[in-house]
Image (cartoon, rainbow, N blue to C red; front, side, top):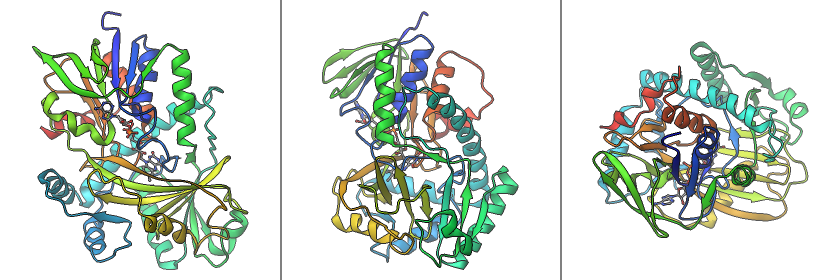
Length: 416
Ligand SMILES: Cc1cc2nc3c(=O)[nH]c(=O)nc-3n(C[C@H](O)[C@H](O)[C@H](O)COP(=O)(O)OP(=O)(O)OC[C@H]3O[C@@H](n4cnc5c(N)ncnc54)[C@H](O)[C@@H]3O)c2cc1C
């Protein structure tokens, strides 16, 4: 192969996936990360693989939710006022997309790429080397209030009409039999049988371990400080380990992607959207299914080796604090739903910065004006679910293979 060397910047779910598909195509791949493999947002997320999550954040009621949150200190969604024009531009662009028309248009794109990603995941996870506690037993969306259950029912009907996605409604009186970890007296749930879950840190370790055996070179604690370009091409990266060069460069730097906007000469409107998780040892009665609790905006994930509750979306820049009140809030939020909402031992309190775009779609495509640079970032709340699709899309792009997937909607050109 003429262009045979590729450098991937960033070793989160997205960088690892890109390395995997590029290696399969015969590239000599180096992945560099200024921290550790899977040590950032891909470390302790919920671990949900969710083809059901086709609706973007830009829904018609998102603005109202945002305004209400200003007056609710415990709101899951929060914007910390900051003197950064980029944040206000981001909010403005996000706000003007909160229409039903835009929601359905974006949902159609997400539906296609999530479905494609699940097909790839199934092939990948058939490899016994990728041990990551994967369980394909679906997901439950649980409700305490009848009104919330009915409202979700209307949304489920809309998802069926628009995208052919449907869930099974489980009435309250059947719910404890279905999921014995839940309390009696809940209104009911919707069950999506196509969703699944895995332990994200285990996936990162197993996948990168397998790739190392396949010849991929991972370089940790190596930050990219500058990008050198000449005549419409990247000629090298100035890193903390010295100059590195290759034939192709894939930028998978997650929430930090906008750091490369100037050097790549391209608008990359990615903001960090901070979320938290708390991982515990298994409670006395473990849920059998992963749970989403929309009334409290939390996700609950049962692993073979633990139990996690996660939530929140804070636009607070790169604030790296973990307020104890937020972790307690996660545990308290599960109390009205679960017989044993917390495990006996807390193993890890964590935050991650999601790479958020204002249109809820990832940015995947060639950098305009640079013939050997590709962006693979902006995966919002779906970076795990969309990782295999992204890796394959990047490899297809470099190999100039045709695809039926809506790549134009993801191209960096949309922000020019
Ligand atoms: C609480 C929470 C729950 C979530 N749950 C889910 C879920 O259930 N399902 C799902 O699909 N998604 C979920 N997500 C979203 C998902 O975690 C992210 O979309 C995903 O991890 C993004 O992956 P990434 O590889 O783009 O970024 P990251 O994992 O953040 O990786 C980016 C890497 O780039 C490196 N880097 C940055 N700049 C440089 C530089 N200059 N030089 C070298 N390296 C650099 C960083 O060190 C980092 O390791 C959740 C997120 C949160 C916070």
